[in-house]
Amino acid sequence: MLTVEAVQAMIQRAFPGGRVEVSDMTGTSDHFEVEVVSELFEGKSRIDQHKMIHAAVADHLGGAIHALKIKTRTP
Amino acid sequence: MWNSEKIQEVVESNKIVIFAKGTKLMPMCGFSQHAIAIVGRLGKPFEVVNIFDDPSIRPALIEYSKWPTTPQVFVGGELLGGSDIVEEMMKDGELQKKVEAAFAG
Image 1 (cartoon, rainbow over the protein chains, first blue to last red):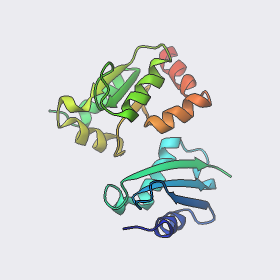
Image 2 (cartoon, rainbow over the protein chains, first blue to last red):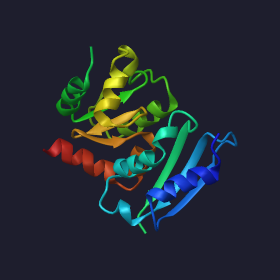
Image 3 (cartoon, chains in turn red, purple):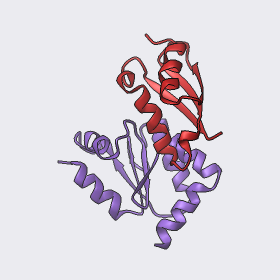
Image 4 (cartoon, chains in turn green, brown):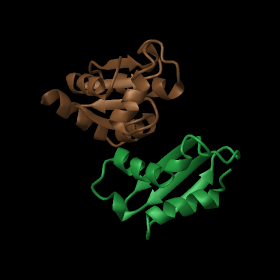
């Protein structure tokens, strides 16, 4: 089972200098809401921004992470 | 039998197409229903492919779009995303712009 801190750390590694906030949506440690503010999103479509976050947690998607609600913004 | 080439064919031959769980009139998942409703309100013709029609559709779609979930909304051949992204794009007018461009071309 993944903790909020573990998910946050995985995504933070992919967005150095970005602000990454993760919360547990259902209290069951498998539905996470993620908000990421990073300049790496500059000029990228929303779907590509979301794919970047999926890539950061790829090995847990569909397993420990059942669902991800994603919000992205450039600074 | 569906493969990513067939997905590409459908995506490029329809200005708006949604790969969803269920049909336009009978969506079988809340997210699919939400995406179909948002796109429906734009008043433009759109296609819905029910991934339950054939078990090979979903793996072919994921291979093509590199996106694991459904629904998947394509406008002008471009994957916009699922219901959350399409809703955000509708709220800030980006969805309407993409649709106008697709029908103008």
